[in-house]
Length: 135
Image (tube, rainbow, N blue to C red; front, side, top):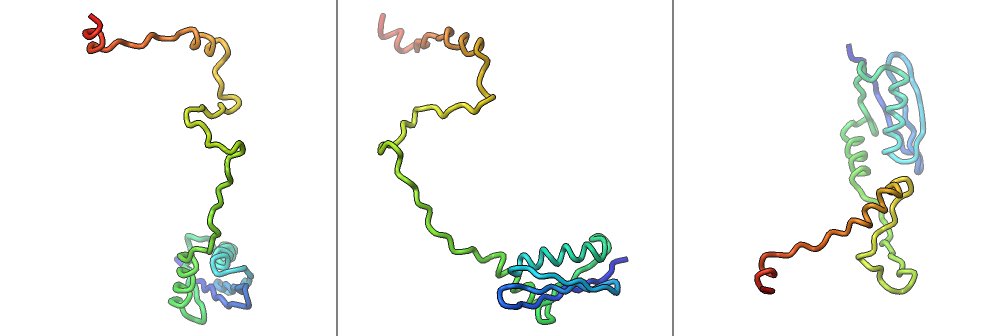
């Protein structure tokens, strides 16, 4: 059987006060911002009842619709971010694209394998068109 639990939110300056009530108990908490307040409400609900046995109604000014609108607006609004500044290269020139990045420590080939690879230098394959031209 599911137990109805009510989570009420009240904004106090920049913080939110949360009151979670159900099962004849009441818990309160505070959080900075509505998103953090919603997370805090979930933590308080877990103290009252196991999540699989509870239905939570979130209310702002007594309205689930008002809470949902405020919460979704906060979730979908991107914060203002300053543009990314890319510093100039240290030597004043662009890096060579052909240069290989360093191999992370512990990912190098064993020395014997590395030496064997450097000894095996395959000759470039001749294409049939080049072979015909040189004849």
